[in-house]
Image 1: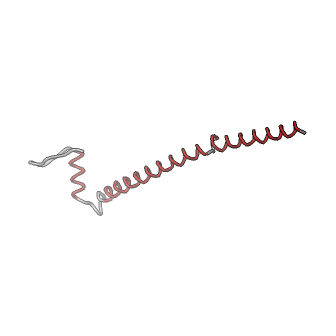
Image 2 (image 1 turned 120 degrees about the vertical axis):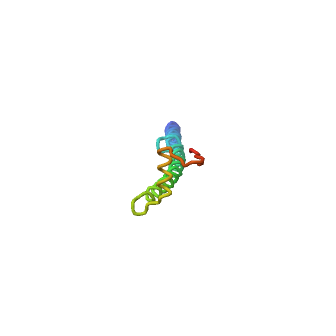
Image 3 (image 1 turned 180 degrees about the horizontal axis):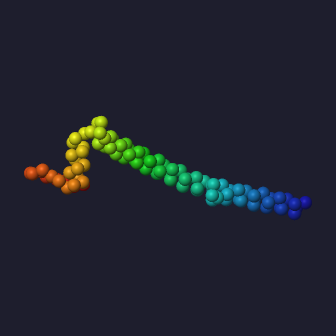
Length: 94
């Protein structure tokens, strides 16, 4: 009877330690969850930044299309691309 109690206690202890280890250190454990959460937050921030950049580029492109051609934008892009400047004009390159 005593052997049975010791065996049962050892088995339950082993099972508890195994499950606790799996809960914390496995591929789907708590540590992986925290890593995934921080990576997700970083990717969400980067996605917002890229969407903002994309919208700015789309606005710039839309101003260069035929129907809504913005002469100033076209002039700016031509000068930047071709390296032209007017007399007495100071050019700052980004």
